[in-house]
Length: 101
Image (tube, rainbow, N blue to C red; front, top):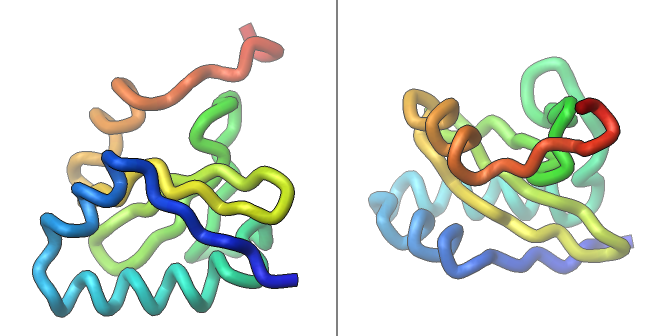
């Protein structure tokens, strides 16, 4: 089953701010990893984020991280962030899982 990939307005801004070469790499990675198996965790690419309700997953693509949620057959990209900005992005954009409080 192919998943639909949607970008939030913030993620779309993040994407447009990248240089063309990196945009192409990220677009290919989203198609390769998120179109068919967005919840298949791996040691180096996809990670399920613990203790967070949102974002649910992180995809590593070179020096960037793509944070996203999966619901039904839709992958919603929340942010495309440089690795060195990931921690601050998560602090300001994540929602903790209330079960873990």
